[in-house]
Image (tube, rainbow, N blue to C red):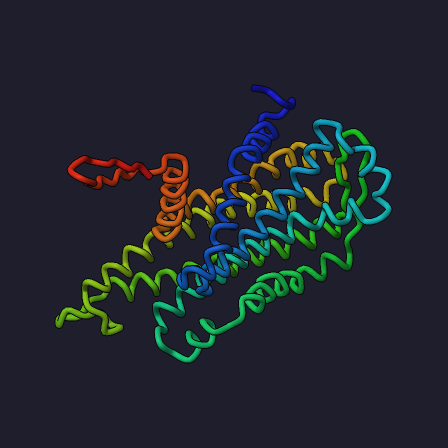
Length: 327
């Protein structure tokens, strides 16, 4: 099925109608079960919700622009209200939310690093007792602070009302590209270091049958399997983020070129790269997270029981004759 002249946009639209509802429902399930199950109240799942919110925001932003740009729905409205900061908002949302999501990967890894490598320390206890809103604030405020230089030099406008191609000043392009590239490299190095430390702790076993944390081998294996699954999750997220990093690296190299033909061709790929970065999160969570798998299975079991109620027959003998009652 071809919806637009670009296959990349067709993929984004297909993902929006198939994976986006699944992602929203998954986040809602985690949020609703925070009061029922303590596991979903941990800092890890708080950060999963925070990361999911960032994904939802960028998905909606890109999808709205895509609808206006390639289907002609609302494109004239966006063009005529660009003086109210619409083009400015759209040009900054992409790189800013990439930093937010990359910082989310760093925070999730940091939480696991402290929980595994510094188990029982005051810092671990402090993080466990943090209010969820504090974690949300940290997740979003630090990337916004890092992005302030790009905000200060931001200049953007739509080229025309049909394609809504956003024209940025070379200074703005170079500034946010440098911020994105630097943030990605620093976060990636720290994530790699922390996961190497986590795996080293989990795979080192003492002669007496305990690891360096004093845990038995049985408990160590359970931790090891869980952390390996989480490491795969983070690796796939990082791999998808690397594709966007490459995008910004190429865009940075084009910033000084007055001919915007190359940038126009390049920006066709941004929606699909950003969408893949967002949707890999729910896919890996469902495939690798045992807690969420149990949650989803229990919900499907409840739906099945609701649609197929059990029939219970009660046999009662009255005056030598059987009386059967069905409930």
